[in-house]
Length: 138
Image (cartoon, rainbow, N blue to C red; front, side):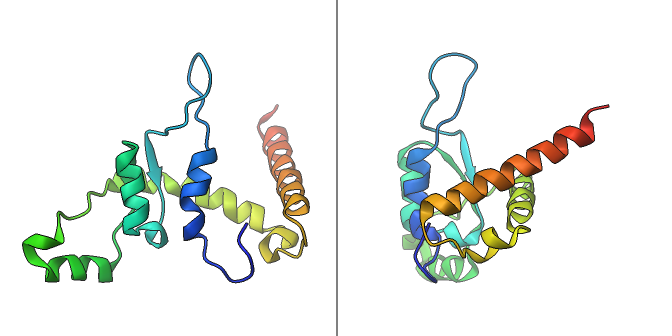
């Protein structure tokens, strides 16, 4: 959680450090194959972190960043690679976030402590899971 009107982008690296990716056997890994994010997370620091950890960045480049890179000419570096097909799968996560935010307490962050906010997220996620489970069960 960020305080007040703070942006989410500075939390990109701390969140990635806490991610665990389950494999078929053994303990969960700490490095996903790719990270899909929107343009808000296209900073040089975030891209460098992903590159150093050998994680594929599926983040579109902001127009002003692309323009600055082009203005520098050969010193501006290579254009950012972007897998449009993989980026469209980000929609699944966005739809889940919208379902979570449909609950007013989560959307408005009225909870005073991170623990109570997290408890609300868990409760809302359980409600979504149960609804999906009852919808798909004959």
